[in-house]
Length: 229
Image 1 (cartoon, one colour):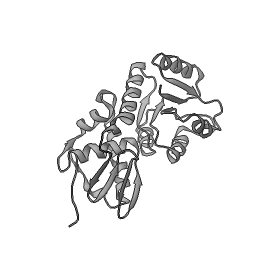
Image 2 (spheres, helix red, strand yellow):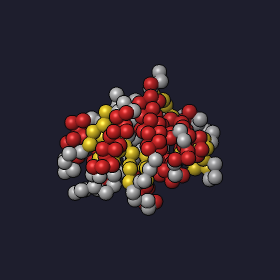
Image 3 (cartoon, helix red, strand yellow):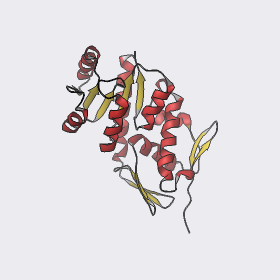
Image 4 (cartoon, rainbow, N blue to C red):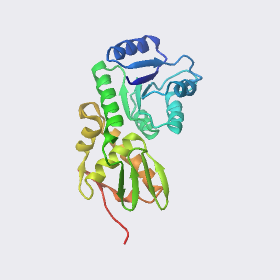
């Protein structure tokens, strides 16, 4: 049974979500003290976090940032705020998805199921390590290592890199990536993928690999394979 932590101060909405998700056999918990979110997160060790932006004391962006400093657990934002910068900010902080209120419950459950399948099933392949451009990618630990150091990726970033490397030197369309990550592109903003790829490229820049991920305007992305002699 997957454990879900709902960081939502609207008690009516929280209890409705809890009731519905419990019927889908999820173990759902909320926050009792919004000044001790991390303490409750650490105690529960959830498999997925759903978080609102507007919260007492500190906003959801704050808690997303803190959670990301401790864990790669998948995070879905659930918010009534509809400005594009809110979605971009959430993705830049490491969120996996963003759902705008009001929402249809079928959309929420579809996104939860897709995220859990992607995060906890995709890295069960026999091959956990992959080499690319003289770097080692550890799909289980979500890390990329070369002579310049080691970077840690989120699950989404690891999956994007995995998809690109599996089709190295070939264009992977945006539609292919969106469908692979989120399964149903009808529910995904095009900006979501852009932010995730840009975040991945920025991290790869830290170990001098960012320029090996190229954007093909109007088509998609390509991971170049270049090895030192």
